[in-house]
Amino acid sequence: MRRKADLCRAIIPRIAVAALVAALFVAVLPAAGRAGLATAVMIGYDSFIDRFTILEEDTAETVQEFHGGIKNSFEHHTGPVKLGLFSTFQFGNQTIDENFDGELSLSPSSGTRIDLRSNVHWKQFQEGSDYRFGNDYVQSNNYLKLRRLVRDGFIISWKSRFEIIDYEKRTDFDYDYRYLDTGLELELGSFLSRFVRLGAALGFKEAPDTTALGYRRTVADLEVQLASTGGTMLHVAVLGDRRDYRETVRSPYWNVLSSAEFSRIGLSGRSVSVRLESELASFDSPTTVYFDTYFVRGGVRLKLPVTATVSVFVEPRLAVMLCGDFPEERYREGTVVVGIDIIGSETFWATLSYEPGYRDYLAEENDLYSNFYVNRISLMGSLSLPSGLELNAFVSHDPERHARRDDDFSITLISIDLTRRF
Image (tube, rainbow, N blue to C red; front, side, top):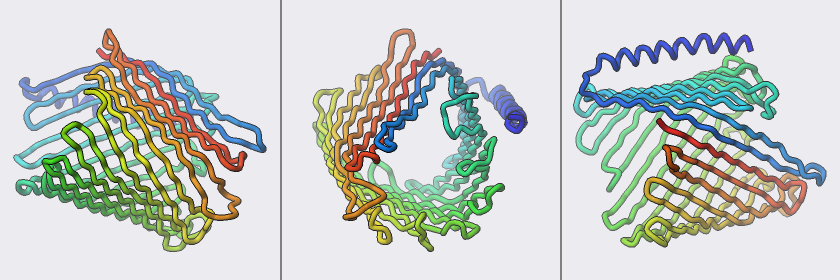
């Protein structure tokens, strides 16, 4: 804990100085600016339940956390300057979390904007915590974006990101690293009609204690959207991510993500959309641990309004996993998502979905995996209560019932909090 204490003593004064500088900066801003200060207190409960089977005996690992916390925010807007300072402190029986965020947006001239964002996150696991691999850490993320409007409908941006993380202990899963990337982005058109965005970036990751995990990263992405006033829209996105590792412990590889959606919304609010997504992993030198795979999933989503605030939806899906080197990895999966959306003005909203289905591994003999039934359930919602109270809830349950009982598995997540704003 001494190392962590030293680290916190090094970072916390910097946060205090940053907050003081921001406060002084705000103090000299014109009085005509708009400022807002808000505080919220909260109490909550989080639960993570992992169920699996060992030698036909059902086993469960459970982490339950009761926590309370406080949020503070300060925002100031005057002319070309926007400033935001946000802090969140949460104390629980399992962990202690503290977040500090700062946002600054400047418009030094017409058509030019500079955005800066910074986050510092400190997480400490309590003595006797139920987390098996709990490891205290401090993480900082910093973003810079310079945006320039060249002419109507044409924007060029330069973006950069710096991330650093420091763990209390070095483990097989947790290691300190520094990451930096920078790149350019071009935008053409309007997102409400025809829009094209093209970006490219170069990044570097350094891990002082394990240089084998350091790499050079090259990223390129393309996004295209075509929309009409009649409610028809086509959206396509492709991202290519290349990582070249400094040593030979892990092979360099390409990861390519793509998605496409064609949708149409009628005057009654009824909508239909066809969706397709894929993920390709291609290694220069495949091994038994890192090997080529190609995942494809498609679906058709139909959404029907029932009332002004309630709508239902259904989406049949078909997914396929392809793997040329290892037949055991190949499967096909068919599911159907059914659900309901409820939006009750500004006081209440909820989304409930249920996704039953079946995954079928294609190899006739498979010692690694077995076929299983899917029954995914998800619930999200928020309810405004009297006296400024707000109740938020998230529940997710994903059980797998396998043909081979020893493979049965399920993950359940529950998160509930009650917030009072001032």
